[in-house]
Image 1: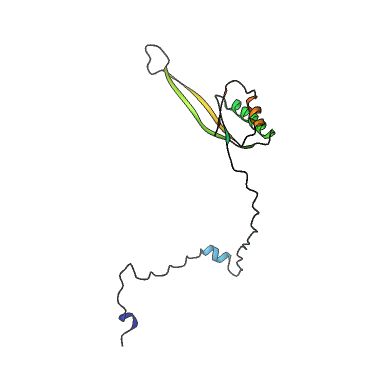
Image 2: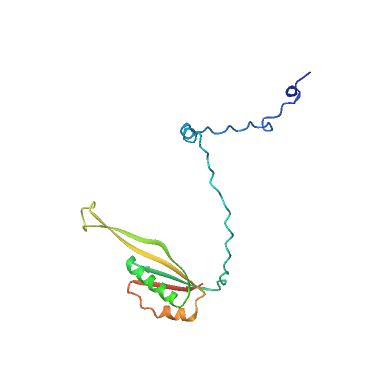
Length: 160
């Protein structure tokens, strides 16, 4: 009488059942430390689902303000002033988002004729921030146009 294993046809390698994976070996130090002790698994509990807040009104239009300056301290002060003005009129503000600093570099010869190896390098950094005001009211727009910002700060305002 033939055995069961001998009567089965050989399957191609791709269809053969794979051997079950071996269990990971337990570290000896862990086995010694937990020997004779009851291992307690952390208890997982389901938290109640959070109540959904009322959805904010859809954004019909927004005021996009790009602020640029050479000095970052003056830039941050003027951004704070814009944010405070918008908050005073209960406007929804997104930002300030720091945009990449634009760096312009120049290399110049120190002397006019000879000494080609002696050079100076100069750079000019332009710091930028982006602020969005969602669904601005006419009062907010008027207050922002009347702001007195320090010199050296450039503002671009667009209605998107």
